[in-house]
Length: 188
Image (cartoon, rainbow, N blue to C red; front, side, top):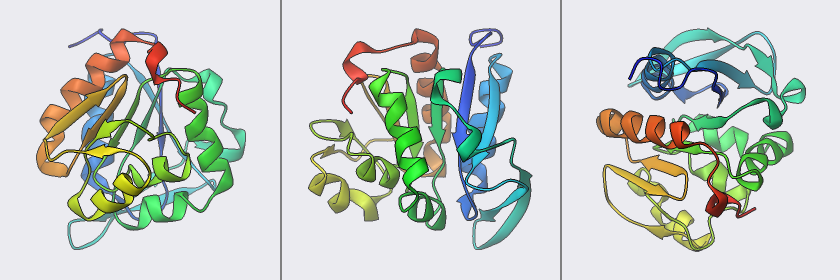
């Protein structure tokens, strides 16, 4: 995979309470494939991860959300965790930033509870995806077709259920990002 994503920039949108492995594993795979990754959060400083059953490490915010411009990125990664997407879905800037990737047809990858932010961005009507099972009804109510697969790709949108699915998620995410803009992704 090395070099497959050279000259690609991937925004990683997260805040306190993201599931640590759902950020670190995809980020490492993206970087190994040659992509530049940028951790974006509502505030500057650091954000704290959740690691299994307790708080995890602190991660440096590389760009605040109010300084971030989706035009400067090729793709978006949305890690899960219960607290992380719940906070982001109440942030108008996070919703607007996320929606911008769909409007431009850029690849988006969301894992576990990450798709909750996509509900607020109103980009799921008629889309097929997966998530952590507890989010299933919310996604269906937003117009999505929910399936129970380790990874689902729908026109540039890559989703998975949990950390157990990370190997398949990472592979498909990199494949979709390497393909670039997906005209059919423009749903927002």
